[in-house]
Length: 88
Image (tube, rainbow, N blue to C red; front, side, top):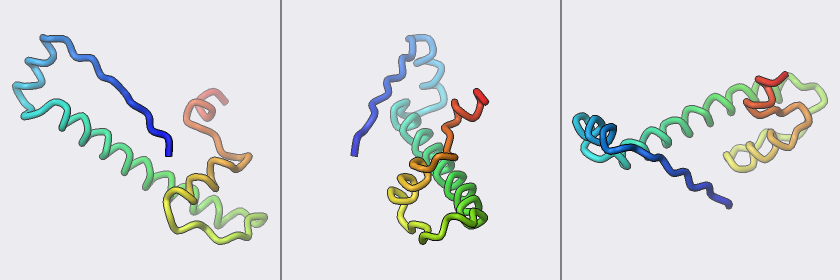
């Protein structure tokens, strides 16, 4: 599985501001990203389970694991990323 590394730059002033509230900036960022990934997965799973169930031409079983589900959905011709949906 491929991974993506994302770097966040925080200047000295913002670091001081964040450390006023946080014990560890990196830990907080990692937790925020984990929360967003989980929320996005739940939303995608709910949205696409309904679409697949309502699609009379789709007769295959809906995958029960995340990787297979995402592969199925993103391979469909009617799938669009957020950027593609916003552009249309």
